[in-house]
Length: 174
Image 1 (cartoon, one colour):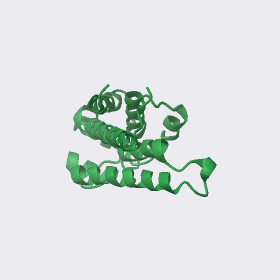
Image 2 (cartoon, rainbow, N blue to C red):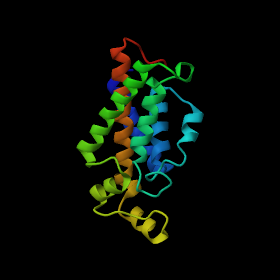
Image 3 (spheres, rainbow, N blue to C red):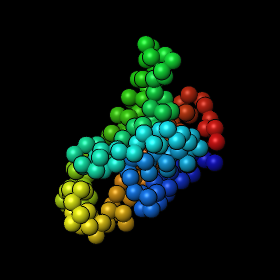
C-alpha cells in the first residue's frame, strides 16, 4: 500500500471510531494501530482516561493529540532497556511530537481540549454535566467536530510515523 493510502485509512478510521465508540485518545490510537498494523492492546488500554482533555475534564490536552503523541513514542521513543541512554530515539519522538503539536496549532490554535472546543464549537463544555453533554452532541461532537479532530490527529500522526520510517530507510511491517 502507498503512503497516502495508509494516511487516508488512518483519517477514515479515526473519524469512524470516534463517531461509533467515542474516546478521542483511544480512537486516535486504534486508527493508527489499525491503519499501520502496529496493534498493542496495552497502549490502547493505557489511553482509557485520556479522552476529553483527560478524564473528560477538558482542561488538559486533546485526546487526539495525546493519542498521537503516544503512538509516536511507541514507534520511536526511548526504550526501557536503554533507559540511561537512547538519546536519539528520545530526541526523535520529541521532534515528531513537536511537528504534531504545530499541526494542531495551525489548525485549531491549541492542543488544549477546551480551547479546541472553543474554536470548533464556539464554546466550551462541562462533559460531566448531562445537559452540557447533550448540547455537545447536538452541536455535532460526534457528527463532524470531534470526529474530524480525531481523524486529523490520526492522519497527521500516521504521516509523521511513515515519514520517519522512510527517513530511516525502513518499511512498515504489516
